[in-house]
Length: 118
Image (cartoon, rainbow, N blue to C red; front, side, top):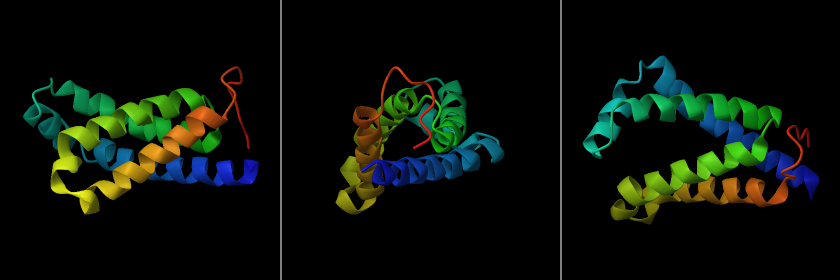
């Protein structure tokens, strides 16, 4: 079971690192515009991109996995209810999968350990 969780954690980290890197290395223009269109301050787009990128790297390493997973859950719930859900299941399925993977990491890893290698 631990190997299965490791694979989930690694894939979750890789996915968020890639999506965060697109935001970070793209200059944050798209996430800032998207967040502004939703009625939030634009700097939340910077925070979102940095959390996805840095959080994804930390998830791959296994450092603070539970806390990072909690942040990913908040991000995915926000994405699901503000953007994707109204567009139907096919546009929501990646968000739902990432949400479920984050919940799996959140409930499976020890909160008292900062580093979980497997």
